[in-house]
Amino acid sequence: MAETKKCIRKFSAVSSIQLSCRATTGLILTFCLFFHALVFGGAGPEPNTIESKYSFIYIGDIHIDQTSYHDMEWVKSNYPKDIKQIENYVNNTKLYTPCLLKQLRAHIDSDRKQIQMVIQGGDLIEGLCGSYDLQFTQFRYAKEIIGQYLPNTAFFATKGNHDITGPGAIEAFNSFMLPWMSDESNKPIHSASFCFLKGPDLFVIFDAYNNNDPDWLKKTLKENKHRYAFVVMHPPAVPYGARAAWHLFSRPEEKGIREKFLAILGEYRAIVLTAHLHKYSVLGRKTPTGSFVQFSMNSVINSSRISVKDYIEGIQNYTGSLVSLEPDFQPDTVSQRRKWLEDEKEDVTYFEYADFPGYAIVNVSDAAVTADIYTGVSNKKWKNVNLGDILKK
Ligand SMILES: [Fe+2]
Figure 1 (tube, rainbow, N blue to C red):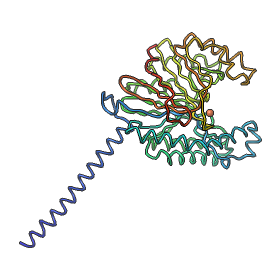
Figure 2 (figure 1 turned 180 degrees about the vertical axis):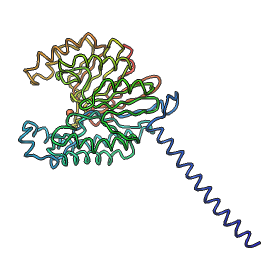
Figure 3 (figure 1 turned 135 degrees about the horizontal axis):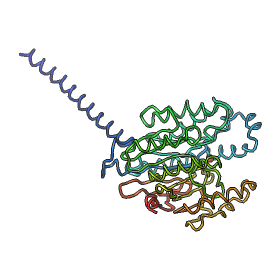
Figure 4 (figure 1 turned 30 degrees about the vertical axis):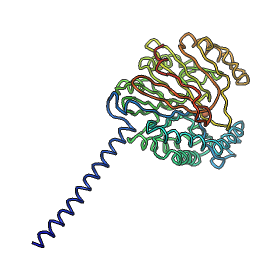
């Protein structure tokens, strides 16, 4: 009897451990599934759930840098004019990048889990390192600093020109960034052009430099059922400001492919997140197949006191005279840049422009897609823009 009681006690103890393990495993599994769904999304739209209402942070160029990550002899020989620029980015990285990331973390922590990821628009690092090893080290440093401040938030970056500039830079991008993006999206990523679903929404991270195939973009948009389509790429699709030749497919021989590309963005009413020009802009663009909206941010914080300069609003101000915003920029190309703006203006349905660095919190729901714009590392909102409304124009 005593033996039986002992066995029962032993069995009960084992059972309760098993049950407790099963319950814990179940809880862990449920939590993992919930967390995965929360961060990476499910297969289809689920209206009125937490998956269909969320926010993400959008930041533009950052150019994370450190002097030791450059072969300065190589820089002096190949990019002598960029030495001052490197010094500035090294300084910004030391003084302001931690403040920016700290501020983003504060939003994430205070926003009751509403902010579920950070998206970066390219030129994450300064590049111009001079070798594969140095470029790889610069990427690793960027990941470390981001992980230090944003350890529990998914982070996605698109390819910028600086990320692939210099010998071995493309190889370093492929060997560092693709595994990083694979980890973030929880699936193998073999190209800098890739996509993932966040709840009912599709995010296309588009490589504007080495894999900018409009057919791939169309196939991706068509095959992935979505509520909103966000296309994230470093250069803008539509020119704006003084640097009006820095958009994708801007060469004369690319006219046909550009029209095709814009028509795809219009057909799928894309929300295009861009950077590259180091300026803020919101722009609506109509195409024969529909309209899309382009939203550009710059996150090169270079001062503790940031003010908004050159704020311009209204399609009547989208003209060739925008080239005068930077009168010293490439005087020999001014007429070509002016023509770009003049040729484009009849298709522009909404226009905002300003010169300041900062960041944005994009709020997504069935009802709207809006962007809260912040200047510098401030936690005070400068303004809110309804990106969804611009699609209706
Ligand atoms: Fe940049």
